[in-house]
Image (tube, rainbow, N blue to C red; front, top):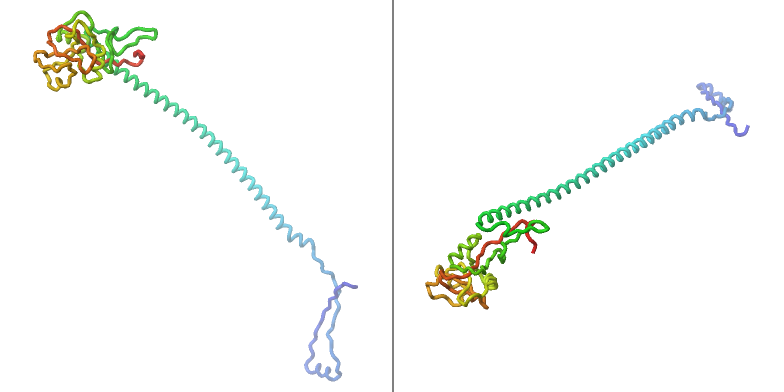
Length: 292
């Protein structure tokens, strides 16, 4: 049969010593080995053996990969859940922080307002105490001299009625028919808690000269607080019409003059004249102050 493979068994026999050699040499024949023919059989691989040898490994690998995939999916799900939970917590924390920050800012604003109100009330209390102490010291002035009732409530001025404010001071220019001496003029001012006016500078002298009126004759004026011979420096600094030389004229009158820097005259303290009082203006709490 073509294509068949035939196998045989070759048996080699050894020559028996010299006898065998002799026989070979004598007849010249060549001994051959005995060949036996064996029945051929077709060698085929057993499929069951291959399947048996490969199938378990493949299955194990497949199972392992499946398990790993499941574990990976579970891990991803767990990480996602953890991240979602963490994000939720962070969002809640951020919301809480924002709310607390807003509340804190509101508290700080409220605190600043309270501090401002406390400061204002403290200042107002000090002003009221100062004003009250001043009024209590007066012998003739009353609250009605400063304040009046309006539709907007009680409102007050820095100076009493008939007084004129100039900066931080109030001035009273007596314009009645009762003239008096320098001493009595000073006492009259004291009843208001004031004194005869002291004039310190050119600006103040200009204000006083603006309100001094001419009356009776050129020798009469308004008593002011200066004394001529008590201080040589003040004598030189005064706003004199003519520098005084008579030592008996020791009091000073402010005269009506076209030149405010030259409006003082020395006079006898017993002469009868009008007068000018001066005192500090009052600072009222804002809610009582009349707007100007």
